[in-house]
Length: 340
Image (cartoon, rainbow, N blue to C red):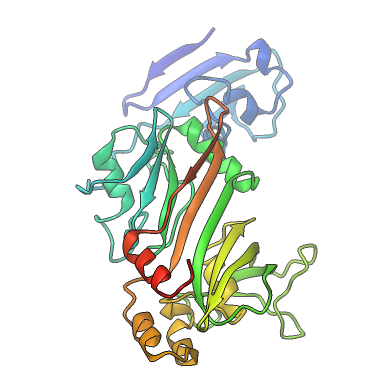
């Protein structure tokens, strides 16, 4: 029989004899069945922080439960967030009790970081709703994936821990659908293809990422032979238009690494227009038309847009798909250049 008590510091303690449905399960899977724990990730967090005992002793996640096992779980008191709200009207494409889908504008940072402590999407979400997945008081409530500051487009946010765990698993298992569009400087040689590499911090410029280079001085591309550093990244692309030294690409992500599209395109001679960090400024001179060069230098952002996002709803299991066109100011440029 379950017995709950409050400690002096307001932490909650749960004491319970293994329930019939828990017998034979790993400890982490078993306690995730409890409504107070609810998810496997929360169970792992509690176990990793030595907050779960079996028969009076700290237990491992892999511990198989027996019918006579006594489980004691110390649930830490909620940690108040220090995040400040930011009064910004969000372009909400969909919202229910589990998720919120937003069309993020370019120029908006997703979560607090150096130089952006209070004017981020997370701060705006706190102003918009009280229902966000806090995941033990972390400073990125509800965030399961991100878009770079200058990337516009669709992002989904979790409003409770179950939704957070489900969406995180979908991104990890690569079952989400993600389509981006980009305008690049340079003429793509092939109409379609796939770029594969391991991505890691650039060895010299820590603001950038780069493909890990092998002994042959080329990006390592064998997933079965991983280097000591770097995460496997795969980007599929189709060239939709090529004109005046520019290429308009549709990109499908198989993985979602930091700066993945920007690195892959830049390293293949197609830096995204406006992306000075990855060499776009140096490439402008290759464009013959002077007026087009002036347009490229005047861009307020780099031209990358998260146009489609598909996922399975965490609660209803309905397959959902959202699409969003380029912002009008960018669309004007793309049409002017004859790419659309």
